[in-house]
Length: 296
Image (tube, rainbow, N blue to C red; front, side, top):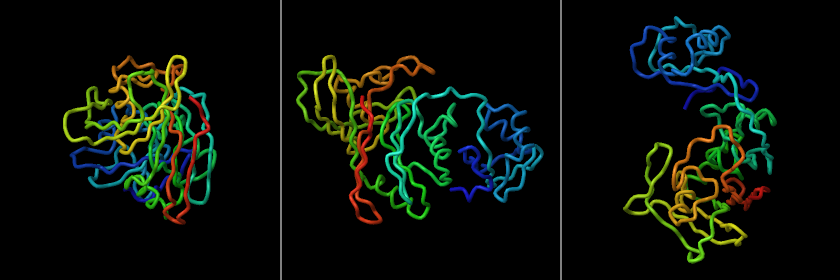
C-alpha cells in the first residue's frame, strides 16, 4: 500500500501512485515514457511542470529527476476525452461508515482504461465530497445494481472481510432464453480458470471452484427471468454458468462466443442486475439488506 497521498483530490479524482521497480534508467522521464507508452513524452513534461508528479513528501519531480528504485511517486491520470455515459447512479443508503449505490449499466465502478470521470467512484466523490470513498467489492461495467463503498478508514477492513470470508448474501437477476427441459431450481458447479482471450474465463475438468444457485422467477413471452445466488465469486461466474447451461444472458458479448467490441454503443445492455446484498454488520450486529431499484 502507498502512504497518504501528498496530492489532493481534484474534481473527484484521487492521485495514482507507483512504486519504482528495479531498473537502470537515466532519469524519471525515460522510465515513465517506457512504462506508459500510451502517454506522450510531452504530456509527462507538462504534468511535471504543473506539479502533478511528486514524490512521497510532495516534492515536485522533473524530467531530469534521478530514477530511484523503491521510491513511491504520485501523479494524476489524465484523459484527453471521455465518452459521456448518459445513465445516473443513485445513492440507496449512507451513514458514517458506508455508502450504498445503485449503479446503471455501462458505468465502470473505478477508473480504468479509457474511463476516469465517467466512473461510479469519481462521480460519487464529486457528489458527496467523501475523500476516502472506496468500493469494497466490484461489479463489471456491463452489470447494473448494488455496490457498497466504505468511506471510513477505521472500519474499512471489517467490511472488506465480510466479502473475503463469504459472509455476504448476494442475489442477482438475469434475463436469458427459456429452456423448458431445465429443472429449476438447481445448483451449478464447475471449475473455472483464465481463458482465451485474456478477458474471458473458461470451464475445465477438475474439482469445482465455482457454485451458483439458479431459480426461475417467471417466464416471459420471449425469455425468462432468473434469480442467481453465487456462493463463490469467480470473475464472470454467472455469465459462464448460464452460458454453459445453454441459456446465455441476453446481450452477453463474451459468452458463449466473443462478439466484436461495440465501442460506445450503449443500446444493448447486458441483462444482468445485482439485485440485493445482505449481511450482518460487523460493527453493530444489525442485519443489513440493500436492494436495487432498477428493473431488467
